[in-house]
Image (cartoon, rainbow, N blue to C red; front, side, top):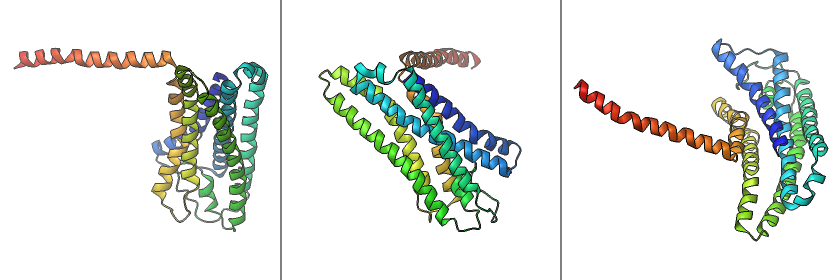
Length: 269
C-alpha cells in the first residue's frame, strides 16, 4: 500500500506543479502569455499525471481487494515485482493517453481568438480556438476517454462490491471496522477525483462562463492533489497524535496568555 501511496504522491506533486507555478508566475509578473510549445507541454504533462493517477487508483482498488478478500495470497499476488509492474503499467498508460490526446488536440489548426479563459492550457478551451470542424475530433476524444474511464470505474466498483461482501462476513465488529478504515481513504480519494472531473467535463456545453469554468477547473485540478495527502495521512496514528499535541499546545498557550493579558491591562489602568 505504501509503495502505491508513494507513486500517488509523486503524481499529485507533478499534477499540481504543472498548473499552479505558471499561473502564479503570470500573476506576479502581470502577464497572461504562454508560448504554443509551452501550452502543448502543459497539456501533455497535465493529462499524463491526471490519467496516470486514475489508473493508479484503479490498481490500488485491486490492492485493497487482494488485501481483504485474499489476505493469505497477498504476498504471492502482490509481491515487489508485481507492484512495480502494476505501477509501471499505470504510468505507461497515462503516458500513452496523454500523448494521443495532446497529438490529437494540437493537430488542429488554431486560428480563432488566442485567449484561453482558463488559468492553464485545458483541452476543451483549446478546441474552442480551432477554426476547423472539431466535432469529429471531440467525439473521438470523448469516446476514447470515456472508454478508459468507464472501464476503470467498473473495475473499481466490482472490486469494492467484493470487498464489502467479504467485510460483512467478518464476525468481529472490530475486524469490520479495521477493514472499512483501511478502504475508506481510497474510497474518499476516488470519489473526490471522479466527482470533480465529471463536473468539469460533463457539464452542458451551453453553460459557458469564464468564471464558472475557472472555478470548476480549479476544483478538479488543484483540490484533489492538495487534499489526497491529508486524507491518507489521517490514517497514520503518529501523525494524528502529533497534530493533537500541536492543537492542544496552541490552545494551552492561548489560554495561558489570558491571565497575563488581564493583569497587564489592570496595571496599565
